[in-house]
Image 1: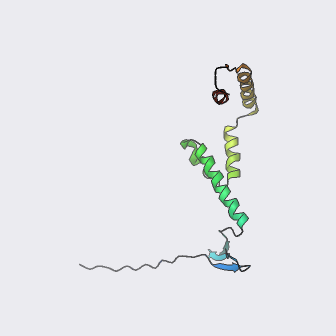
Image 2: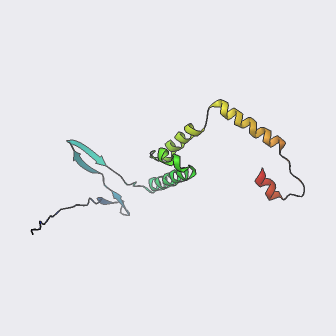
Length: 129
Protein backbone atom coordinates (compact mmCIF):
# COMPACT_ATOMS: atom_id res chain seq x y z
CA UNK A 1 0.00 0.00 0.00
CA UNK A 2 1.47 3.37 -1.02
CA UNK A 3 0.79 6.62 0.69
CA UNK A 4 1.21 9.90 -1.07
CA UNK A 5 2.52 12.82 0.86
CA UNK A 6 0.74 16.06 0.15
CA UNK A 7 2.31 19.31 1.13
CA UNK A 8 0.42 22.56 1.02
CA UNK A 9 1.79 25.97 1.60
CA UNK A 10 -0.50 28.50 3.23
CA UNK A 11 0.38 32.09 3.73
CA UNK A 12 -1.26 34.62 5.96
CA UNK A 13 -1.31 38.22 4.91
CA UNK A 14 -0.66 40.37 7.95
CA UNK A 15 -1.39 44.08 7.87
CA UNK A 16 1.64 46.29 7.45
CA UNK A 17 1.88 48.88 10.18
CA UNK A 18 3.87 52.08 10.43
CA UNK A 19 4.45 54.46 13.31
CA UNK A 20 2.59 57.75 12.84
CA UNK A 21 3.53 60.91 14.72
CA UNK A 22 5.70 58.76 16.98
CA UNK A 23 2.79 57.62 19.13
CA UNK A 24 0.36 55.36 17.28
CA UNK A 25 0.48 52.53 14.77
CA UNK A 26 -1.65 52.78 11.63
CA UNK A 27 -2.36 50.39 8.81
CA UNK A 28 -0.63 51.02 5.50
CA UNK A 29 -2.68 50.60 2.33
CA UNK A 30 -1.80 47.47 0.39
CA UNK A 31 -1.96 47.12 -3.38
CA UNK A 32 -2.60 43.76 -5.01
CA UNK A 33 -3.07 42.60 -8.59
CA UNK A 34 -6.26 40.70 -9.49
CA UNK A 35 -6.75 39.75 -13.14
CA UNK A 36 -4.51 42.59 -14.23
CA UNK A 37 -6.40 45.13 -12.13
CA UNK A 38 -4.66 46.94 -9.31
CA UNK A 39 -6.68 46.97 -6.07
CA UNK A 40 -5.74 49.09 -3.06
CA UNK A 41 -7.13 48.01 0.33
CA UNK A 42 -7.31 50.04 3.50
CA UNK A 43 -9.52 48.13 5.91
CA UNK A 44 -8.73 49.50 9.35
CA UNK A 45 -9.84 52.94 10.57
CA UNK A 46 -6.79 55.01 11.41
CA UNK A 47 -7.97 57.83 13.68
CA UNK A 48 -9.64 57.58 17.06
CA UNK A 49 -12.72 59.33 15.67
CA UNK A 50 -13.04 56.83 12.82
CA UNK A 51 -12.68 53.95 15.28
CA UNK A 52 -15.41 55.42 17.49
CA UNK A 53 -17.69 56.00 14.48
CA UNK A 54 -17.17 52.42 13.29
CA UNK A 55 -17.84 51.06 16.78
CA UNK A 56 -21.05 53.13 17.08
CA UNK A 57 -22.19 52.02 13.63
CA UNK A 58 -21.68 48.36 14.54
CA UNK A 59 -23.70 48.89 17.73
CA UNK A 60 -26.49 50.65 15.85
CA UNK A 61 -26.66 47.89 13.21
CA UNK A 62 -26.79 45.27 15.96
CA UNK A 63 -29.60 47.07 17.77
CA UNK A 64 -31.60 47.45 14.58
CA UNK A 65 -31.21 43.76 13.75
CA UNK A 66 -32.20 42.73 17.29
CA UNK A 67 -35.36 44.83 17.00
CA UNK A 68 -36.44 42.93 13.89
CA UNK A 69 -38.19 39.59 13.96
CA UNK A 70 -36.20 36.56 12.79
CA UNK A 71 -37.99 36.42 9.44
CA UNK A 72 -36.84 39.94 8.53
CA UNK A 73 -33.26 39.84 9.85
CA UNK A 74 -31.80 38.15 6.79
CA UNK A 75 -33.41 40.70 4.49
CA UNK A 76 -31.94 43.70 6.29
CA UNK A 77 -28.56 42.27 7.33
CA UNK A 78 -27.24 42.89 3.80
CA UNK A 79 -26.87 46.64 4.49
CA UNK A 80 -23.33 47.62 5.43
CA UNK A 81 -24.11 50.60 7.65
CA UNK A 82 -26.81 51.54 10.13
CA UNK A 83 -27.99 54.61 8.22
CA UNK A 84 -28.94 52.74 5.05
CA UNK A 85 -30.37 49.85 7.08
CA UNK A 86 -32.63 52.22 9.04
CA UNK A 87 -33.78 53.92 5.83
CA UNK A 88 -34.68 50.53 4.34
CA UNK A 89 -36.55 49.47 7.49
CA UNK A 90 -38.41 52.76 7.57
CA UNK A 91 -39.36 52.39 3.91
CA UNK A 92 -40.50 48.79 4.40
CA UNK A 93 -42.51 49.23 7.61
CA UNK A 94 -43.36 52.94 7.59
CA UNK A 95 -46.45 52.65 5.46
CA UNK A 96 -47.91 55.26 3.16
CA UNK A 97 -49.33 58.66 4.13
CA UNK A 98 -52.91 57.36 4.53
CA UNK A 99 -51.76 54.66 6.95
CA UNK A 100 -49.72 57.15 8.97
CA UNK A 101 -52.68 59.55 9.18
CA UNK A 102 -54.98 56.74 10.36
CA UNK A 103 -52.47 55.69 13.04
CA UNK A 104 -52.17 59.27 14.30
CA UNK A 105 -55.95 59.62 14.47
CA UNK A 106 -56.28 56.39 16.46
CA UNK A 107 -53.57 57.47 18.89
CA UNK A 108 -55.28 60.84 19.40
CA UNK A 109 -58.59 59.11 20.13
CA UNK A 110 -56.96 56.76 22.64
CA UNK A 111 -55.25 59.71 24.35
CA UNK A 112 -58.51 61.68 24.61
CA UNK A 113 -60.31 58.68 26.15
CA UNK A 114 -57.51 57.97 28.64
CA UNK A 115 -58.47 58.31 32.30
CA UNK A 116 -56.94 57.32 35.62
CA UNK A 117 -58.47 56.79 39.03
CA UNK A 118 -57.10 58.48 42.13
CA UNK A 119 -56.42 55.11 43.77
CA UNK A 120 -54.05 54.03 40.99
CA UNK A 121 -50.33 54.65 41.49
CA UNK A 122 -48.50 57.16 39.36
CA UNK A 123 -46.20 54.45 37.96
CA UNK A 124 -49.09 52.29 36.78
CA UNK A 125 -50.79 55.32 35.20
CA UNK A 126 -47.60 56.21 33.38
CA UNK A 127 -47.12 52.60 32.19
CA UNK A 128 -50.67 52.48 30.80
CA UNK A 129 -50.26 55.86 29.12
